[in-house]
Image (cartoon, rainbow, N blue to C red; front, side, top):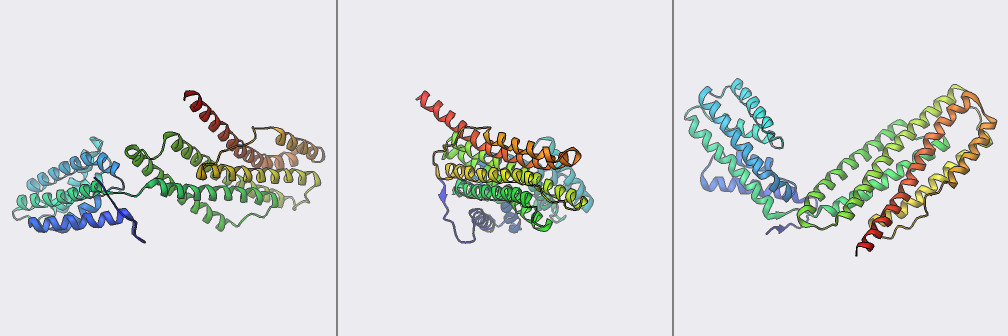
Length: 370
């Protein structure tokens, strides 16, 4: 039975588990008079896992990797010595063997184990090498024990918090890119790159937490498959929204350069009407996205109007009026930039409405089955 770890300020559960595994490994080696016991601590650090599922999944693989690596190291050291060249060749052999056997997750751990063994004193090498092998396996055993006895945090809470932040950041970024296009006042390149990197890092963290949540959910069954699919769909939607934002930023930069090359001509009344429609479109997206967030994180029912082409038909009318005043290459270039933004807004609003329709379809299917 797993023991629940209470969260401590500035100390995560994995940090605490690592410290306990190191202490346990060194303590056991001290009791058994196995030296050098510090190797057991290093082995424990390298074998600690972020979740019980990964611990169970990797346990057999970790043990096999260590057996293979230690065997290769003992054999090489006993037959050829432990010069730097032999250690390098043994490392190549350890990596190649584990890769051939498709034991990819713990190759680094195997290499470290092999080096520990080969670093044994040459005098009475076999005895020292075997002792170091025992030390390494004590560290591995301590890590597996701590992984299985101490429960990890509920990753779904951390994931939801990260997902909500990522959704807010990606939507805010999208809205700002659209409004920057409309006003022709984009953020400077340094601020843009900094914010883009922040969202990328947040996305990476969110995806990692989602993987940990899914692993944990396989044996704890805290969340239904329907809810998990909803979260995954919401994550994918915001990932695409993030990349759409970058498309719009690029279109804004191209529009600025194009206007600059032509002496920044005044914006016509007809084109202002088109920009006003884009403003209406992004406001509509913002309103829909608020409802979507409440549905995802507060479990409020998602009631949206069916997908309608009325707005886009109205936008087409304004574009036709604009085209009557501006023709040729000038219109085509400007229209190309507008179409990027308009299509991205259309995709975003339509995706949220389709999300609503699919949710109703799932609910209706459940009701029918019941």
